[in-house]
Length: 223
Figure (cartoon, rainbow, N blue to C red):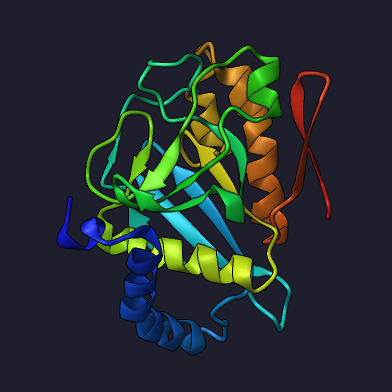
């Protein structure tokens, strides 16, 4: 752990915010975006990339603000199905303010909320799946301490600004039709086809969908 991680949680988060907020505000302003406005996070496991979007006040669309490399994510493409399988989940998750952990063993972290209703209905097990600092992963997304300072701070600022939860979508890869056809014989193709509906919804609207669970599958609607 870094020296910063030895600080009490509240102080650790405050130190992180003091370090990164000026740069974040400057870079957001350059794109016509505001610190503290709602955000949306999208992750692609195969390419180890995290995209962070911020809602544009002028358009009400979510614009890409940062792309972060994922430092470490255990497992391979495919959903998490059982405790201890070392897999990072795939699906649609939600991070309320209560899921933020400034006193993490991995500097700063937040719980994505696995297993969600879909996971539970499909008898998937596991817990404490986090986005966190450091560079080690056992089913979590490790972002390094430096990057989690920014990500955590933007999440906390959005919560403080009134966003009730941060939507986090985790995909195996970019869900294009060609990419999905390449996995036509994969046992996960039906699940991935359902994920693609949510991916396409955002690609077309640039607004995260309202995600629910009905009859064994994800359902996507306009909020």
